[in-house]
Image (cartoon, rainbow, N blue to C red; front, top):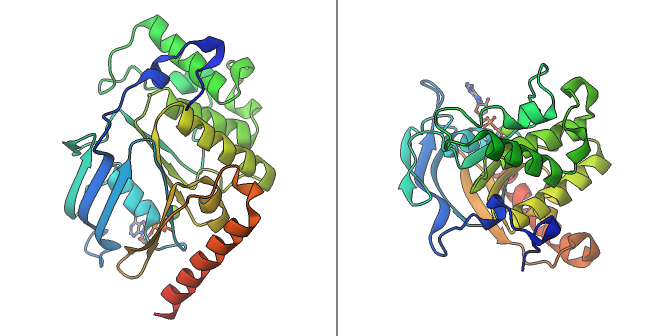
Length: 272
Ligand SMILES: Nc1ncnc2c1ncn2[C@@H]1O[C@H](COP(=O)(O)OP(=O)(O)O)[C@@H](O)[C@H]1O
Ligand SMILES: [Mg+2]
């Protein structure tokens, strides 16, 4: 079971209940085309269970980012339906949060200001000042930046900036975290730390996550389920449930076997 938060108290995010059945997100028959161009992807079906980490893996240009933007409703699909928390999704949802490769922090706000930014926008649930401050503090502490709330983006390393971006997402108490190659600009050591942190946070905050990556090892270390995207137009061509015990670094034989299987599937895609 998940350990309670520091001090034995469950904060709001950990307490946030989810329906036991149904999916966090469910999409059917999705297609998308830019302007009059050929479809980037077509006939995509995808289900993400509550609290599940799904990695969308595929080569560069196969349409992962486009699919993520459509699933999060930053773009409208050209065909198909998306359901989020058992309702039709027709606009970005306040309980779905996004993290991108660049932290995109506002340089004139400190870390706390960046995490809190947007929490009182119209489409967000109304929060009192103290609730807002508590959310920001809790999110910063969850990503290990409790002592850095008043640092400005220029004073943060790349890894710390991405932690702030993660905290900004968590402060929305998301039921689903969309992340598009969030660690690919970081050095290998920081990336490994952030992968562990993501898994820990998703488990502790009872959120689900859709992580887009082109990195097979990242997918294997992080995912409960891996979806391989490929083809033209792009589709989900293979799926693996990853039931390797965590920490997965301690299971090299199982990791290597899965890695080879995924590599073979990628090669088969290229051969077509
Ligand atoms: N804004 C855009 N306008 C037109 N075509 C685009 C745009 N963004 C991406 N594409 C095209 O859509 C395809 C998929 O891109 P993308 O979703 O970014 O792939 P990935 O994230 O897997 O690298 C590519 O061929 C890319 O050139
Ligand atoms: Mg991309």
